[in-house]
Image (cartoon, rainbow, N blue to C red; front, side, top):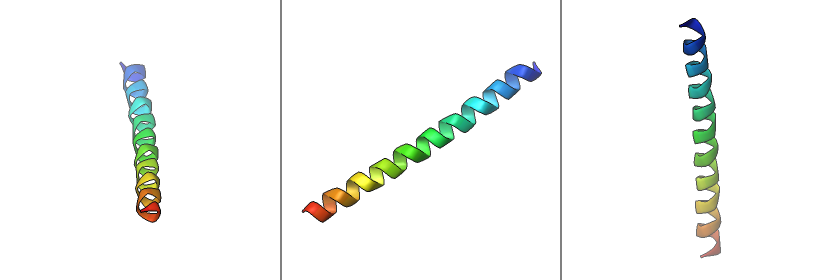
Length: 37
C-alpha cells in the first residue's frame, strides 16, 4: 500500500512538471505568433 502511494505521488509530480512545460511552450508559441503578426 505504501509503495502504491509513493508511485502515485511520483506520477503526479511528473504530470505537474510536464503540464508546466507544455504551458511554457504554449506561451512561447503565442509570443512568436504575436511578434510575427
